[in-house]
Length: 312
Image (cartoon, rainbow, N blue to C red; front, side, top):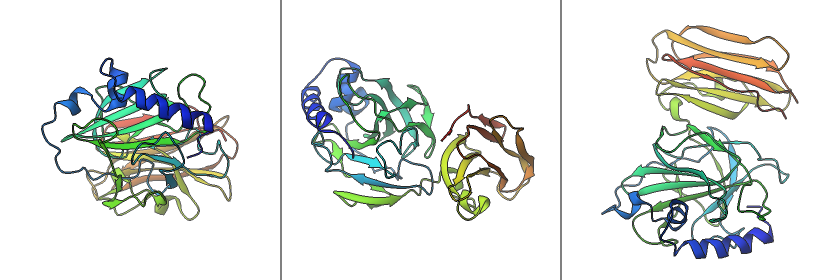
């Protein structure tokens, strides 16, 4: 969305070149000619895609801000400054299998790229990532963290942080295989629209949301799937500088099972809520403005423990 003129011209040229490439995994990915897509005999029903960001977050997408765009690609941003989105969590728009997780180097302008195969000839692309959290062959669930918003590209491309998102389907060559994106069953309002994520994954059958548990003023800034058993969420309240962590269950709802949530502000003792709960653990809150935190939790015997992060 905030691409500079350098990358606008560079990406357009590079994507045009790679669209005709027939050798190399990276070249094939840029052209949409991966083995899984090339051998698909028919496109099946479209998966129930959601916004590729954590539940409750609001992002603005734009398909016109880059001359590198050939069809229905979307660049996502939020925040009022060029670097406001750097390091923000990117999640899977639908469940699937990771078929590309690599830095594309000089092959194209994608930088750190993740491609997820959703079956039936459908796939999604997540480009320019700062970090990649999943490897090739990994099975990911809808709403699972796969990386962070970044500004990686080919050498010499100077771009501001954003997520470049695409939906592709069928066996046609790039860019004819790019499809209009749908979120929660509704076609994106091209050329630009502000959307709120309903990619709530583990909370789909849980009567509670992370915001309800943590309280008014808190917004989800990160999350981690705990297999199929639940999701642990990190929230932030910009009005008072507090973080909040809660773990929401997905299975055994209403039955008290071992569930936990914790928050550790750098330099301070960890605060944990652990026990047998029917729907969620937490909320665990602590003042952490301008300070790094560790956070995590568990459900169904699966645990997540973050490194020091979210230091802003």
